Image (tube, rainbow, N blue to C red; front, side, top):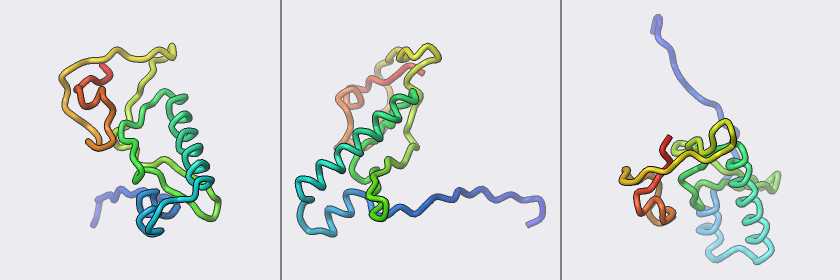
Length: 118
């Protein structure tokens, strides 16, 4: 392997995603637990938006729960896209583009093939 390079990424192992937790419990979360998870999910999305990005693949399997810290993390930014320009203004939209994301969790704009111009 002379003169060859290997690309890799090291990530912290956080735990199961929300879908896996729900399946393993066999039923649903308690109301308080679900409320706390929901608040952390919304805070995660809000933080991403404040940085000028949209995730574009929001679904339960992209939220990971770290039981030791009792935190919820948003993961899988493969479809994320810059949403705001330098002046913190949203980029214009364009129509008739290819669908991206997960159909069951996609926004109405995604289903109508409307995305940002950038």
